[in-house]
Image (cartoon, rainbow, N blue to C red; front, side):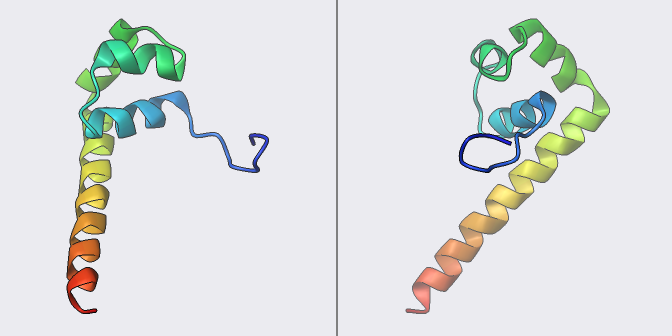
Length: 73
């Protein structure tokens, strides 16, 4: 838990979120505490690709909900 009380997300999941957002592996690695090469290896794994897909779907769902509910005002 950090100083604000948030639970720290594991490095691999943080990397999946950043990959889903389109960030380059060379930037992601240092941000999550590993090398860019490690992020590229993680990205090649089926379970990581599934995590990235899930994150993208959640981002898309959130965007659609924002647009949909924003139009009802």
